[in-house]
Image 1 (spheres, rainbow, N blue to C red):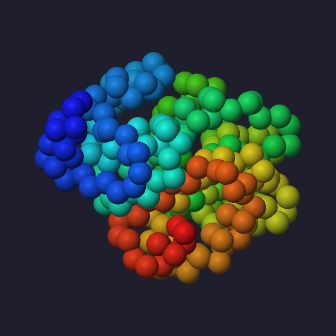
Image 2 (tube, one colour):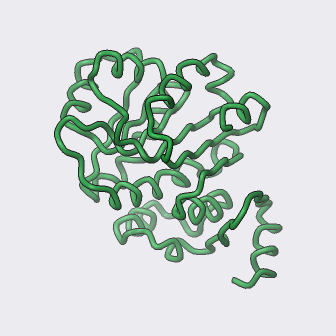
Length: 224
């Protein structure tokens, strides 16, 4: 796309970008250079073209950018960070016994964490990538078993994840792709201390993606 085409595309889809060296959006799924299995699942799901947040979010995430995305629920934001997460996992050395996940996705509620897990499974199962969902209000046994076996992607609520870390059922030494989904909601629910405790255990050169429906000062402070 020319610069004029990029401006027109963003304007007609209500896409606003800030930052340095922001990549051009992609107009078609095939332009994102996702693995064939991803494109196959996308086709089977009946998606015709990327949503605005996917069109701009994918090239930014795939370039390893630190990303803050402001998008409403239903905007397609889950796939905006999940598909680059799969590409990221494939680019890393395989896990060995005793290592924790490569991708960590934090969500405020069990319902959202389960929903993210369901979306991840649609794609990860085709790529020999393992994922699990860690949340309170459910037996710990199966969750511990998954973590001990080794999983590349962990979707978790902050409280239960801290329980697992303190019990040494997993660790975050291999995490290089961190997602905070509905970051504003997590802060509203009082999770900031837990989030900071979790993030302090992750290497500083990670890629971080914040997703939020709003951009209050509290989320901005957390992102900084």
